[in-house]
Length: 579
Ligand code: GLY
Picture 1 (cartoon, rainbow, N blue to C red):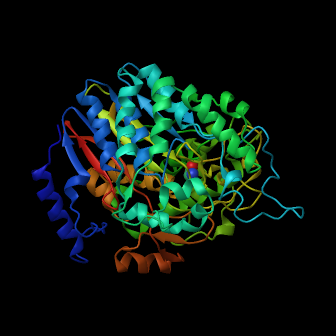
Picture 2: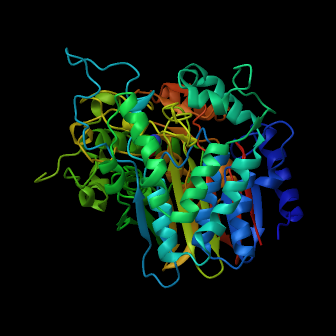
């Protein structure tokens, strides 16, 4: 059953009035979109809470609990439903990561269903004869797509831990694809941005354009009948309904027709990998997050380690000192990311060193107290022996002690733009998360290093950071967000706002955020900006401030005073609900 939380709403409304009213207040938060209220973005519950970036998807998760299912039934239902509801962000043509803790587990486990480079791929595939990058090849069309992993991942996780039949958890997604839904502003925007690329592919035009060949606009009905057929095939046959049979035939036929690289072998060999989480400790809290091929977990923990002894809670979340130290920690994380991070099944990543307290201490000691570090002063650590804003996230927690945090993606808006004819599958453009060559930047401006060059069957480096926070083994928080390289800095800030600055979860999520990723040498601050005196102080320290939307949409759940609080970032579409 859904219920609204009037008490909380009144409290939050007053919080917003306060935070709008000027310099006497503690810090800046985001405004709500016109016509929206905080009410749908926050939920208080006793039994379970689901937060996701779409109403249908959150409700699909809630429905599984109502049918007697468990957290993984809910996670599978959200995953398939959000694939239909947010074709600009994720889909069965993409992949992702999921972190799960059940009460029986001593520690969380993580699942890697990231896309893989095709067997025929190699490190020069995006370069011309002179070794120059071929513009757009890793972003648009057939060569942009890695071998999709989402179906293998969700079906296998569900098989091991779910309790309801697969067909039941997939039904909300099938219904939504068949009946359709009205195009909402965020989707209309993404369609406009990717119109030119989508128009090149007749199967994409069939779905995302009207009968007059105009791109769908806000309020138009988006029906995805071919996708519904593919989902039914998966509901009936499990992973074989995607990686074998008519769906596999359609994928391979389109790849061959357009000179692409994915073959039957790639599909049959695709494997979801259960991995240990990366672990850290922040004061009394245990942090568990996604390890390589994501850089996210390592750098969330690294940033927290650097900041831990500084007790930034004394200053407040938007004090210039807090921002200076946090931005410097972020800057170092991105220098290390460029140098070291890649798929650990292929390259050596100094995971233990990067997440160690000793390394954090060395970095902390190098941060000057009163000035920003220039990018050339920040070098990757030395160890012995060794952008679009898309993607989506959801979190689930329940009273049995289950915690789920999952980030899923097709990479940029509408992925590669190419729909596989007859299947409704929008192919990802995750290959752009590889370094097309050493030093090249991806869609999000992240610098690529040798460890992240394309190799046959390798997984591209990610920033996705689905994270669980516990205290003495007890659930505290499930958190994550979309938005490329900003993912890991937004997750780190939300954790800090909640556990270091002791802010209630809604405030922790709503506060204006900032991001520093080494290159470019700037402090990116959410469009609303910080208080003038804090920004002046940061400029005096040498920061170049760029006011620009970070794109993060945190989906978080926490235990507060014995009950669950779910917050779906008020910056965008989303719903927190449960019981
Ligand atoms: N495609 C965005 C990421 O994996 O970080």
